[in-house]
Image (cartoon, rainbow, N blue to C red; front, side):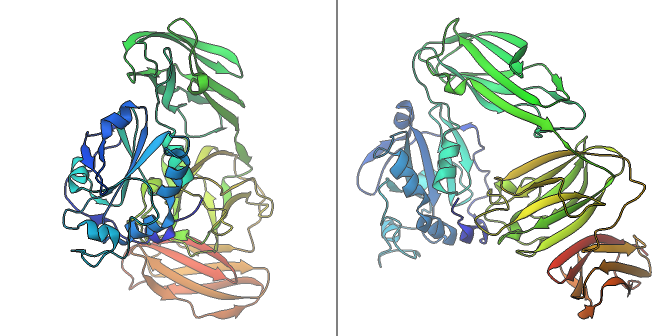
Length: 507
């Protein structure tokens, strides 16, 4: 996916204090004339079963200009607009009431600021109409929205054409007479790796996509193609009407395939079966041989976008790393992304030892703020997890994902014999420290060593003098008696490798 990285470095341009129209709300209707004099009516487009993608921008907004120059909307329109498969319509709206059409054209008559022409090179309609932005309660530029034929609106990040089309295809689109589909589906668990037993309870919206009222549907839940539950639904849904469906818990403890299927509609077949089935494949989670697991992360060119959490089976967060400004919901962040506490350097190898409180089931949750994972077009980023006694062969690995990656695993009782990861061993004690902090590290070959300590504001408060360190065990003593109480991060760079550890100071 092409990455519009310029956007991720700009702050949000806040316009109003009112709340943004929430995703899933009914889109406000409008009739407006574009800058070429053609009139457009939103609900007429939706009534023709068109998906509408609206970009609301301002000519003075640097991220808007960067996104325009990416060509994402034009590529989307060329492939899926009237000249393509004719399944959607793109609309561009200049949402600042204080700018004029000359700003859109990048002409000297612009009464504000414009870096150039927003019209050149695009073939979809352009509007100079702040009232549209107001009706959608826009709070920042640019805002990109997908409006489905059922009139529901969903905000999406300013992303590339392929990702935009993926979002657009989540819209229910009517076809035929008897037609129903599964939308907004979840199997009941974000994890696809089973540790112990997972109770799955699929939920979704049953949507009528046919011209005839939907009065009955047969819904089946299958495990490895064996039916474990059948639900007979009855109602009276008009076209685009929807009904929430929740199936019973189905506990699974082995690998297999979960299938949710709408097998009949109005006591007969479905005119479009393509959206009647949801498949989820589950595998057995990896098992580690102790309660200590080595986590290695290689960041890509945009380490500022990376964040992760370690959770127990109840969802409690036990540890975390990366940019805390991203957080667990980072796939929704684009413009207000700034370096926060824990932000990793670009193209760096980070090592951490995850100490698990007891044998049992755990999960790791990786987040990429921009939604394109840690790999592969912008640096060879990855994550790998190792047994504590074998830091060479990973038990789990990944890095090529979208906004989120959720991995389950199990841990056994602490092994009686274990060896440390000597390429990145770092120990801090006592923790919490009152007067002195002892730093202990071990390396297998002479390398240059740099040490840094950061506070929770991300400020470097202490630095080791660089030195050529021979192979073997080494120690340092830090006087912390005058340091403010609180949490700190020790960042030890040993050659090309970097290890981070948290510690606290308490007097």
